[in-house]
Picture 1 (spheres, one colour):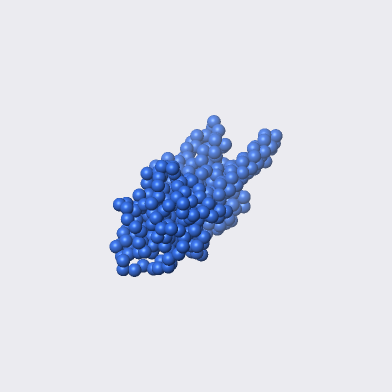
Picture 2: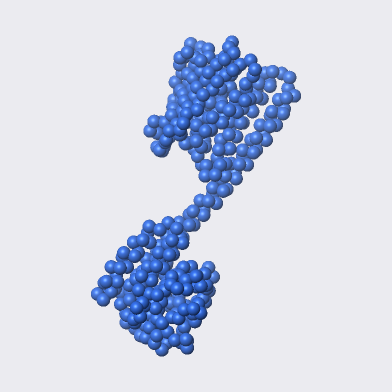
Amino acid sequence: MEQNGLGFGGIAYNKFGLNGNSSDSLMTLLDLIDDFNRQVDSEQLAAKIDEAAQSLMNAEASSLMLLSENNESLKVIHATGPVKDDVCNRTVSVDTGFCGWVTEHKLPLIANDIRIDNEFFAGELSENFKTRNLICAPLLDEENNVIGVIEAINCNPPKALEEGDIPVFQALANHAATAIERDRRQQERTNRYKEQNTYLTEIHHRVKNDLALISGIVQIESLDIENEKAKKVLQNIESRIQSMAVVYELLSGEGSHNKAEVGTYFKKLVEGISEGLSNREKDITIQVHSESVVLDPYKALSCGLILNELLLNAYKHAFADRKTGTITIDLSKNGNRIMMDYRDDGVGFPEDFKLEEQDSLGFKMINALIKQLDGQLTLSNENGARFVVTFEVEETKTKKLKTA
């Protein structure tokens, strides 16, 4: 061990290397640092590190300090001992004191005879505490840069710190530094994720508002049109815009910027279409039964637009000669396979009906959207029309929702 002239009383430092004399302390150390990896909260991690330093050295007090962004001061982020509330959040300059020396030289040290006239003693952080001896070690990152300092003060019961204490305490500091750096990286990732969430939520909110504005303009324009065919065209356009707007309404919710729960989407979509197309002459009941199916926005939008076209067609043709009718939509998931099952008790499809041969814009859209989903379509007449779309997605967990 190298000795130096830092002060009057038994001050020593060295580059640490574990030896037989420190084996007992090392076993204690291993038990203490096991807690570091289990902490997910920055404040709890700081407390565990500080408490480990105090326990390892049987010290009266300890403190954990982190280097400021400008590298000019050390801030006490956690402390133990009788004056912990006094010293917490205090700062010390890196130009003074034992902690400053440790920061500059990147080496641990012990001091066994602290005196007020010692030129390296910067003074007490609290007037209600007196330092007798201390051990201090730097917190070093992967690039060997100092990010902070940890110290234990006053062995309890009083005794001199020994050479073997240095490597064990530095080992604690190394594990503490690794845990702090890991926590900082996690915090950075969390902050970036929150920023992205905020940004995407704002985008979806603006798109939703823009679509609502366009829908309102179309609705106003349709009021001045007397031609019923043209009015129907505008109503269909407005319905499609509303289908897209509902998706962006769901995506603008907190934490939902990159996924949409399709059952909720379908229910909101059905409410909007029923309100827009219902009239006094017909009473159409629409039921949505859904498992929890979460899709990316593009697939959810495709499913919504398909349902929108089916409902528009049903209101127009399925119940042409009837005053009542029932439409049922079942949404389910089996493994990674999604099934959207539409049924109505209307007139059904013509016997020679083929989707790809239809000239209407609505059916052309349905055909294109199914291809976009890489899906398959099954058509049948079962006391009305049945329209089943299946497609595959990446495997995710689902849970049952209460059916409507």
